[in-house]
Amino acid sequence: TIGMYSISLSYYQAIEKWVFERKELRNELYLSNQEWAFLKQLADILEVFTKVTLYMSRSNTLTLPWAIQMYHCMETALQSAGLDNAVSGKLRQACAVGLRKLHHYFDMARHNHFNTLATS
Image (cartoon, rainbow, N blue to C red; front, top):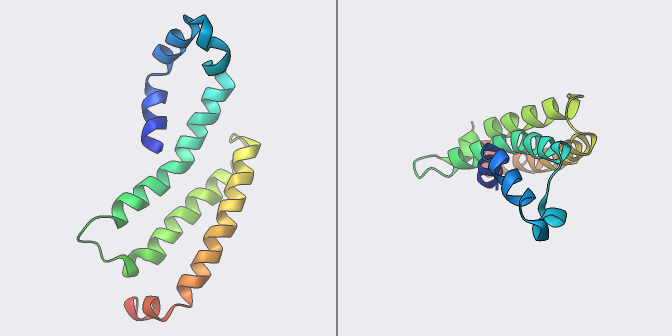
């Protein structure tokens, strides 16, 4: 989850030292600087999904009226990351796949009569 990424990134130096000091773990668990950078980029991209989930999961939030707005938040984040040349090529490709899936579900929501009634 994003929480695990955030915690591991904040303790990156301690984790690196701990793994490096244990020869039996070094080959399996040691992450290069590039792998840490990749994890940071991944955590940054996933953050919007955590925020949307937390917002939509509140007990007093009516989900249907907010669905389209939350869709646009996720779409903007994926588009931005997908166009950012500083982001790993693999993650940009993943963002493109995620956008296609998001657009598919958006079309389903847009044509759903419950959503139309809730947002009218």
